[in-house]
Each structure stands twice: as structure tokens, then as C-alpha cells.
Image (cartoon, rainbow, N blue to C red; front, side):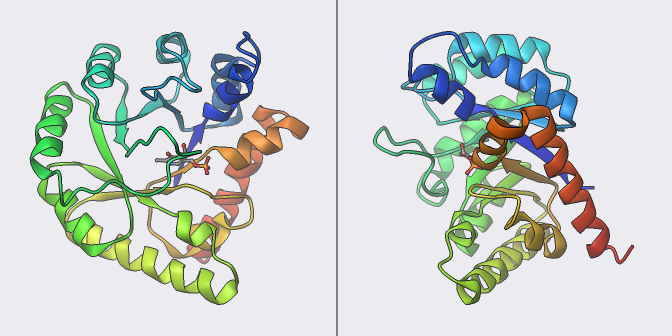
Length: 246
Ligand code: PXP
């Protein structure tokens, strides 16, 4: 069964809008846990625009599910991650001006740097994933730098203007999964996924984890985070059964 990673960064974004203590992403992570999240994801950015060091420390001690820490390759964040030891890290590109992570990591141009970082994490028993675009060269380079998993960026699929483009982007993702699995990589996917566009992904792609933030946190405002997570889990399960012809 496909695992669901729930990204609670957006809860922290709301808190930081007022620089106050609420809503607390630590509480959100606990409730997402209760709703059936398999993984809790947070991104400790260098500029600390949403998740704070205190959130990482508390979530790492309190969540039952696997903690997936998204991070860039800065030395400060690497040192923190090696101290906290999350179950998994996902290396993402980071630009100060961006609203959210805008595209995949360029692995081809920084193979040596990534190989060294990945080795440090793997030597410390931390599973490593690289967030990349569904591009053959990036996938091949990822398999060469020693990562165990990749997370395919689903943004172009999610932002498709019409059904034709969406179908085309889905094919690109499916081909990416095929190439990655042939290279021995485990494949996750995420970014821009919603209660609507996640269904074709589940029905047609062999991925291990789906990482979803904005859509779940948005629904949570109206139904609560535990229920929002439960609904996404049920949706993924329903379409997983369709895929298996069950
Ligand atoms: N995966 C990665 C690597 C991300 O950076 C993000 C956004 O923080 C997500 C998944 C979740 O994206 P969204 O919030 O659009 O669901």
C-alpha cells in the first residue's frame, strides 16, 4: 500500500504570519498521526520562514510515524539533521525568493557534493531521498550518487492547464518511475497533489510514498486535520484497490 506523508509546514506558515504560538505544527503533526499519516514531513528552511528548530525538536520526539525532514544542502541544516536523526531526509533545492519549492534538485551538476552528504546520512542510519524532476538525466545521476529513494516532482502534472497536458505529464511521471526502478531506486512523489489529482497518480504509478501538504492543511481548516488526513488515506486506498482490480 502507498504510504502517505503529511507536510505540516503550512500550519507553521499560519503561525509565523503573526509570530505567535498558534496554530502549533507540533499539535498538527500529532493529530495527523492519529488520522493515519504514515510519515510526517517538515522542511527546516535556512530562513526559518515556517518550521522552527523547536518544532523539529518536539516533532522528532513525539510523532509515532516516520519523520521526513526536507532540507537543503547547507552545513548548518546538515549538522542539525545529523543531531536529530530523522528516519528520512529529503534533499530539496532552496531559494530565498520562492513561495514554495519550485522545482527539483539539479543532481547532475553537484554529484560530488551530494554523494558526500548522502554518505554521511547513510552512515548515520538515515534514509535519503532526493527531490527531482522526472527527467532521465536527473534520475540516472541520482542513482549514481548513492541515494536510496527519489521523490518525483509532480508540480508540472498538478499545474497542467487542461486534461491533455495533465495526461501528458502523467506519462512523463510514469516513465520516470520506470527508469528509476530499473536503476534500483525507490520512488516517492509529491508537490501540488490534491484530493482530485492524486487519484490518477495512485491508479497508474508504482510509488512508495506520496507527500502532500497544502491540500490537506487547506481541507483541515474546515474539517480538522485528523479527518482531512483520514479522507486522503481513504481516497488513496480506494484508488489503490482500483489499480489492483480488487
Ligand atoms: N514534496 C516536497 C519535496 C515539497 O517541498 C513539498 C512542499 O513543501 C511537498 C512535497 C508538498 O507539496 P504541497 O504542499 O504542494 O502538497
